[in-house]
Image 1 (cartoon, rainbow, N blue to C red):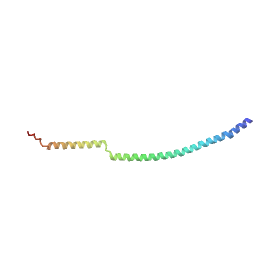
Image 2: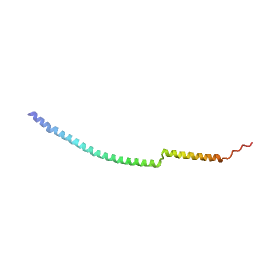
Image 3: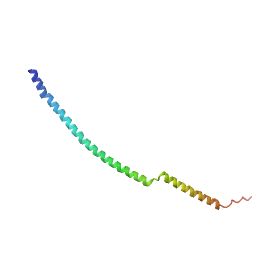
Image 4: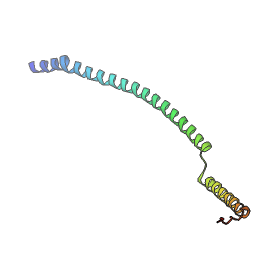
Length: 102
């Protein structure tokens, strides 16, 4: 009978308060983690929205500023053709070189 009372006293005096403290610690930690996770998620969503806006603005600037390769090749071809026409006209209108006197 003494052993039954000792076990009951041990459970009542030590194990129940320890289990209660562990339960409270786990519950409190979980609540804090959920709160901080919610804040972190909100900050991540704000950052993602900002990055999405910045990427869209960059894409728009690239589309406005830079020419495509096909356009560059077309312009290069037209410039080359025009320069060749100018060179041909200059060759046709160039006076004959004079022979040096001497």
